[in-house]
Image (cartoon, rainbow over all chains, first blue to last red; front, top):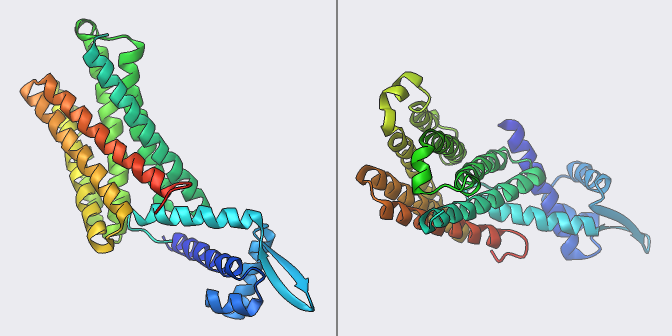
Amino acid sequence: MAGTEKQRSTIRIYLDILLAAEDEGNAKPTRILQRANLPHDRMMKHVAELQKRGLLEEVTSGGGRFYVVTSKGKGFVKEVQRAEAFLSAFGVSL
Amino acid sequence: MNAYFILNSALNLIGALVALAVSYYGFRYGKVTGSSFLKTLSLGFMMLGVGLLAQASAFIFFDLDAVRLADRGTFVYSATMIYLALQAVAYLMITVSYARRVQGGSKAAVETAGLAVLALSQPSSLLLLGTHLFELGELVLVVLLAMIVFQGGLIYGESKNRLALMVLGSFSLILVAHVAELSASLLSSGLLYLVGDLVQLAGFGLLLLFVLRSGPDGRN
């Protein structure tokens, strides 16, 4: 049960990070940090995982570092949001 | 095959397709979220779908009508028992999933649901029941469905979620359908059995609406 809870909360964090990056367009790490409400080291760990899965991409522009949601990431966000709606009907949250 | 059996098989076939669609989405979303709740729910609906499919197939493939039913009494009786057992296990899995969510893994709820199915797994008592086995099976389904409806009601009362209301409505209709089918068997009424099938179809129809609303391109 504890493992499931941990996994669910990780999915929730992934969703928060991706939604923050998607809403901002080119999102600065500080914006994602604020929106996802995570300590810097934990956020970077999750961002690295999302990049590894091809859901988030790092771009450098004008000397700044930004994050962009890939098309695969956009699909993932939609799928998780559908799963969230499906789960809510049974009183379960992500 | 006469019109009554064609209609009965068609209704079961539609119900099976809806149950398998719910199972598919449960599996798909369970995979993306890693939710054990969804995996259990998906397995429950898969068994329900297979059970309904088995019952519909028995009539379609063996081209049974009222006359042939009498000839193949043992076959039909066995097929019905398998179908009832599959449904009982399916609803037990859904009840346990719900109980874990609503009552935080309360053992009491899970054990009560388990007791209902245990009644079907005692070979000696089953033999004593003889022709009343169908009624016992239906009674187990009614108890399990009543638990699902009660827990669904608690979830809707707490969340006021429209999708939760759809799920509650569909299970309520399926419960009414099984009460009608149990009554039909006790009163030997073919018409009441058909009414039960139609109400069950309405229940699965509402479940389909829920799947469409929560699934791709759905509005929720």
